[in-house]
Image (cartoon, rainbow, N blue to C red):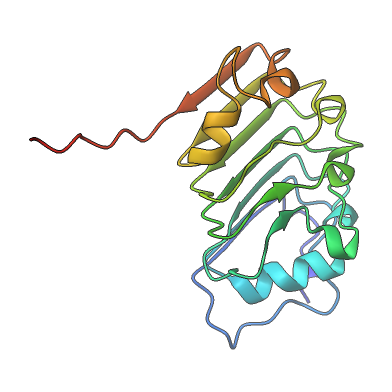
Length: 178
């Protein structure tokens, strides 16, 4: 009966065991902020139900711990799209995420901030025409993406060059001493 909470605007779901399931009626569509972490069953159900149903959602943070089968975001195989109301997205800790499905980002005309953390297999951001409103991009713990998005010389730089604030945080490992 979570939909009975008509004033609920923010929801954080974390550390959910396999026994916790997604509500049949879905999450309240008036949510403006949603965070999901260490809750793979909730994440999977939310994706199947459709994030695009959350028509008031402005901030989305998803952690992929336990979601080892996810290789695209939004998930390409089911045609997942994100709600156009989003202004901020943070995705982190998806160990097998390889690419961003541009089709899922195509209606995000209000997206201003995009944070990507600890996705070691990610190789490419969404296409340039899906990130036109973006003002802030931060990438950390994504060595392949970091290399390909490096200023001026990375092959994906052209997709993000128009963004006013781009921060690539390279995880520097100390060199072994001879």
